[in-house]
Image 1 (cartoon, rainbow, N blue to C red):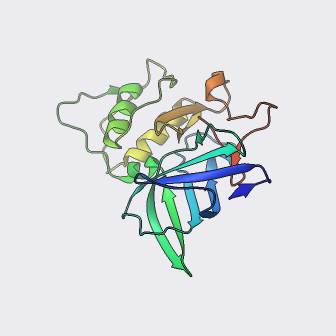
Image 2: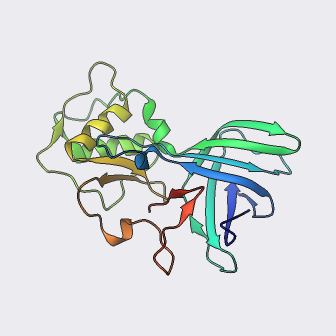
Length: 211
C-alpha cells in the first residue's frame, strides 16, 4: 500500500511480515491530537486490512512500519496487539491497540511497597505491571506522591492523576515505552514528530507519529 503516492507500509504479525503488496488499508488513530488537554492516558488504535495467507494468532503482537518508496530504512510506528478481526472475501481486517489498554486493570500494589509513594516510583511499578517500562525522557516533580490506591482505582486512573499533576499526557512510544509528554513544555528534539528530510511530518493514516 502507498499513501500520497510515495509512502509504503508493512506490518509484522507475530514474526510474519506482510509487505506493501499485501496491505490494502492501514490507519492509526490517537486521541492525543483531537483536542488540547492534560491528564490523558492515550491508547492508540491500529486498523489494517490485508490479505493474510494464513490466520494470525489470537492477541498476536503487531508492529507497523513506514518508509518512503525506494528507501531501504523502515521506520517503526509502534507496538500493538490484535483485539478484533473481521474476514471478508479473502481479506482480513484487524483492530489492534497498544499496551495502554493493559492499564485498565485494577491496581493492587504488592504488599512490600510503601506509601505514600513518589509519582515516579508509582509510574515505574505500573509500567512493569503493563509489561513495559518508562521512557527515559520522562520527568517528574520529586515532591509529588500518590497514596495507596483505594476504591478499586485502575492503573490507568492513577497514571491519569500523575499526568494531570505534571500538565501532560501519557502516550506509548514507537518502542512500546510509557512516555509522560508535557503539553505546555518543549520536549527534547528526539521526542518530536517523525519528520522527513524536508521537514514534513511523517504520518500513518493521517496521524502524526511520535517517538
